[in-house]
Amino acid sequence: MKKKERVLFFCKHNSCRSQMAEAYLKKLASDRFDVFSAGLFPQMIHPFVETVLQEDGVSIRGQTAKSIDLYLGKQPLDHIIIVCQVGEAECPRLYPFALHIERWPLADPASVQGDKETILAAFRKTRDAVKKRVEQWLQNKTEQQNEKGDRQ
Image (tube, rainbow, N blue to C red):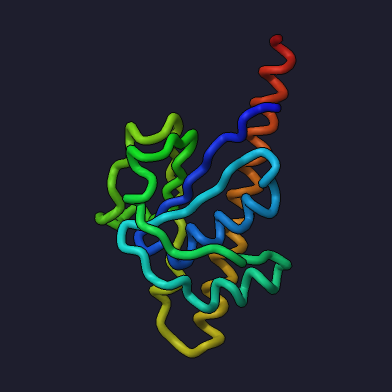
């Protein structure tokens, strides 16, 4: 049996974007990847994360906010995907802690101000962007594996 690749989604608080990405990749490809998420300053998972994921049939059961310290230099990682916005200065450089590091700059819905519906709309927009990025990433990984298979 082939070893699963290990993927870590990282953002500042591990309370929204990285949790969504972890949940989607687990749902779509837990048979191919061991999936984790962590943050620099972990906070409780925002309640709207569960709300908007449930709307799309995705569960975050068992997920908790975790510190990046649990992983860096302690566990081998194949991929780290940073979902912080480009301007978030606190997001560190994570090389050389993974074989592949990518940056997916996604808006932080927890920073949106307004009434409940305005904030929920921001969470839905981020959820949809996260889902699309995860699906594209998986498609690219599948194509790369198929190309490797064709060359062998």
